[in-house]
Length: 312
Image (tube, rainbow, N blue to C red; front, side, top):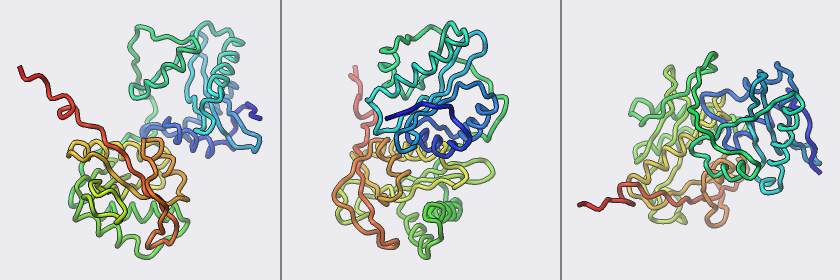
């Protein structure tokens, strides 16, 4: 049984986790600040869906300025998709807007999320001829630049890796830095998120054959992906992961592999959302002695190779 109720400040952590899983967060938007600002408005237009166990499985945030209504942050937990919960949440937002005298509701869909267009069209929404403009009045923190890693970045990346692992596990583990540092000489794709005053995350891949003996022999290994603990939940890991996928594809690799601790649910959700699929049986992490699973992803064929042109 799922119930819908107004969101509260106590829901913040669970809502941010849901938004991250649903791919709604972006590095330039602080989701915690977004939630806090909306709750300060206190207009009753931000609700969550809660299952029988009290877990938050959906959200929708609406707004009304007296002229048009808007829908933002519609998200449903992955195991609840296809149940009609998304449509129910949209209906809840529409009813609340209508009760306030709202004549028309609008929403925006990012270019990379065109798969959701059919969902909204079934609910009666249609594209309209307008260009969306925006101006940021409060900068939470600028989005970092994703760039290639440089030799001078190695130390900062290792520190990021150690900090991210300690935040994940609740304690530091001897040997983590040394294992990470050993991967850098063999890097074939290395990206960092440069915030201007320091690195906020990085991803590093090494050549095929540099992972486990059970890995696909032709697959490069995305062995390191880390985001600074205070910058997590904003979609930066997604951006770094996609940058790695794009570069490995451009290098001509047909697939890539990575390994994730099975209890690292946040990372597992990210990988599965981005199209990575389990491969083989779990193995034991050699340093942490916890189960980890191999994930494989088929890489997109670069446009120049998939569509070379007619040549005439």
